[in-house]
Amino acid sequence: MRVLEQLEPQGVFRFFEELCAIPHGSRNCQAVSDWCAAFARERGLECHQDQTGNVIIIQEATPV
Image (tube, helix red, strand yellow):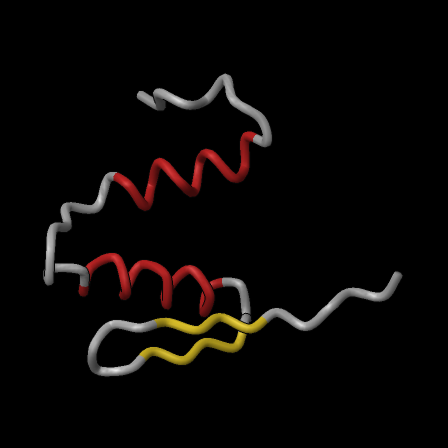
């Protein structure tokens, strides 16, 4: 059951809930890092993930 489904924009809060559902604590964020990298790859975005769990996702600007 989604707790934030009434909030707008719904797409943003849906992803936020998915991310928050991943167990993580101090110095235990590899699962969150992996989720972010998978999120980017599933959408065809350029993604860089290092050994410490930092993730950079690059989305080119859309034409105006």
